[in-house]
Amino acid sequence: MDDLDWAELQALLAVARAGSLSGAARAGSLSQPTLSRRLAALEGRLGEVLLERGAGGARLTDAGREALARAEEMEAAAHRLSRSAAGRAKGVSGVVRVTASRVVATYLLPGALTELLEAEPALEIELVASDDSANLLRREADVAVRMYRPAQADLVTRKAAEMALGLFASPIYLARHGAPRTVEELASHRVVGFDRSELMVKGFAKAGFPLPRRFFRLRTDDQVAYWEAVAAGAGIGVGQKPVAALDPRVRAVLPGAELGALPVWLTAHADLRGSARVRRVFDHLAETLPRLARGVVPGPAAREATGGNAPAGATDRP
Image 1 (cartoon, rainbow, N blue to C red):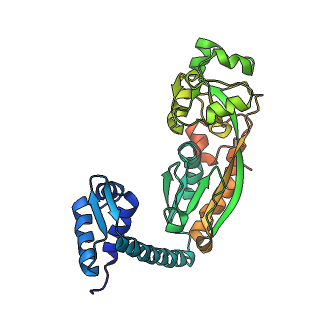
Image 2: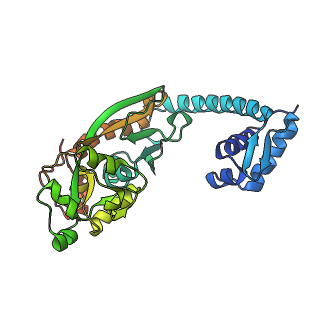
Image 3: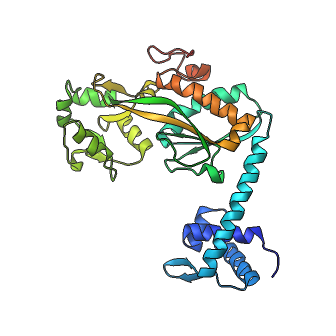
């Protein structure tokens, strides 16, 4: 048997995870014909059929499952080697990949990361805005900002802050419909809700206001689209108070209402905490996120963007 080709094993990993050649091609940078050629070459080297292709996708044979397990072991070893090398990096230079939810990545992190880039000219940031959980063990990200504590092993986690929730609406909506004076009066207003997610319905029910899904006349599960709809005047919506503090397009509604808070967890792989650049990003976010939770504008760049006017009560010092 010829020596195995890592590129061919990567093709097997991609197709097995996507469930089909076309799905693997869409998820990666290789074309479907290239994936097919590499899989055929791997099957030729091993003398085994690894995948059975059909209308429903690609299914692993017994030999394919065994090959996949060995490929995953090789991938894990490669990632350990990569993390070890990154962990020995001394200078605050190079690339750090940060992932966060779409709301946090869109509305909160740009100012904080701009502040960091100004301070570290040799640092590069790749910001991944996604509500999916990136796998830090496979180096899909170096640092993750999440509203829950990740449960994967070999991770360093720190609770950085809590983002308080509130009710908000655009001045356009309030001018047309007025503002509710009590939580009960929300029933007579347009409220923006979630679509397939039941979090909003369950949240109102827990607060003593059982509402049917159709009560929310505009519904979306995309968090950025949700906030943009509120800012456009579609109705009253729930949002993170730090996001609202940086957005002049919205006003607080029923500011005394208690809606709780979302915990914010910072996470990195334990190996990467030895990397100067990853530690610098991790520590900067650990310092900045609590300030953001208090509505503090991060750095001079944000003040310039708002014409020098920070949110009420905000300061550029923690």
